[in-house]
Image 1 (cartoon, rainbow, N blue to C red):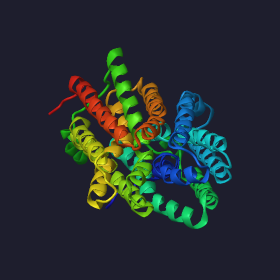
Image 2 (tube, one colour):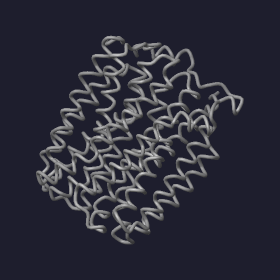
Image 3 (cartoon, rainbow, N blue to C red):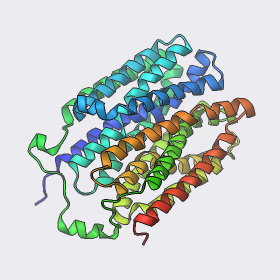
Image 4 (tube, rainbow, N blue to C red):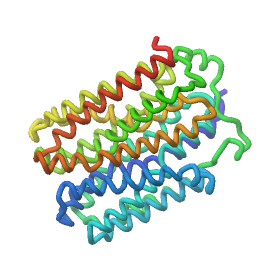
Length: 407
C-alpha cells in the first residue's frame, strides 16, 4: 500500500510558485521588458542598466532587515506580503512616465525579491524536511526556471501587441492571484498541521549514503569570509548575467523572437539543472556536482562572447550552457551554506549569504551597460563574468576539500 504524500511536498510546490513570482518575474524574466522600457523612455544603456541596479540596491538593503521582518511576520504572511510588493511594483511600471518612476518601481521590486525568495524558502525547507533537503530546495528553486521558460515569449508578444502598460497590469493581476493561493497552501511548520518533518525510509536512506556527509561544519573566520566573497561573486554573475543577455542578443543582431525563444530555452534548462543539482547533491555530494555546473557556466561565458547575430546553433549552445550555469546561482549558494554551516549558525549564514549575493548584484549590475557604452557591445562584460566563475570554482572547491569528503 502506498504511503500518503507528505504535506512537505505540497509546501515545496507552494515555494516553487513563490519563487516563480518573486525571483522569476523580478530577476530572470524582467530583462524581457528592458528593451521596450529603453525605447519608450529613450534611455541609453547605462540608464537602462541602472533600473537593474536600483532593484539590486533595494534588495540588498531589505536583506539587512530580513530577520527582523520574519520576526514581525510569520513565514506564511511574510511571503504573501512580499508578493503584494511585487504587485505594487508592476502597477508602477505600468504607468511609469519617467526614468525616476521606473527606479522607484524597481526599488519596490527589490523588496519583493529580498523578502520572498531563498531566505524564507530555505526556512520552509529546513522546517519541513529532515531528509532530502537539497532535492526539496531544488524543486522550489525551479520556480524561476518555469517562469523563464514561459514568460519571455508571452511578455514579448504581449508588449508588442498590447503595449507595456497592459502587459504590466496583467502581470500584477497574476501575482495577486498567486499571493492568494500561497496564503491557502503554505504553513510555517509541520506542527501547524500536527505533522512531523519529512523523513525517508531506511531502504531509501541506504541509497543516499554515497553522498559525503557534511554535518556541523564550523568554518574559520577566514573561510567564512572567503565563502561570502565567493557568494558575492555569484551575485555579480546571477542577475546581471541574465538581465543583460536580452540586450546582448539584440545588440549582436538576433531578432526579438529569436531572443525570446533563447530566454525561454534558458528557463527550460534551468528547471532541469536545478532539479539535477539538488538530486545529485543528495546522492553524490555537492563537491563533485559543483565542477559540472561551474564548468558549464565557464564555457557559457566563452561561447556568449562569440555570438555573431547569425548562427542560431551558437546562440542555442550559449543558451543551453548558460541555463546550466545560472541554475547553480539560485540553489547552489543555499546548498553550500547548508553543507558548510552548523545548526546554530545556519540562520545567520543564510541571511548573510543572501546579503552578499544581493551586494554582488548591486555592485556589478551597472557595469555591463557602462562597458557597452564604452566598447559598443557586451562582450567585455561576459569575459569578466568568465573570470568570476573561475574564481568561484577555485575558492568554493578548496573549502569543500578542507571540510568534506571528495571521494
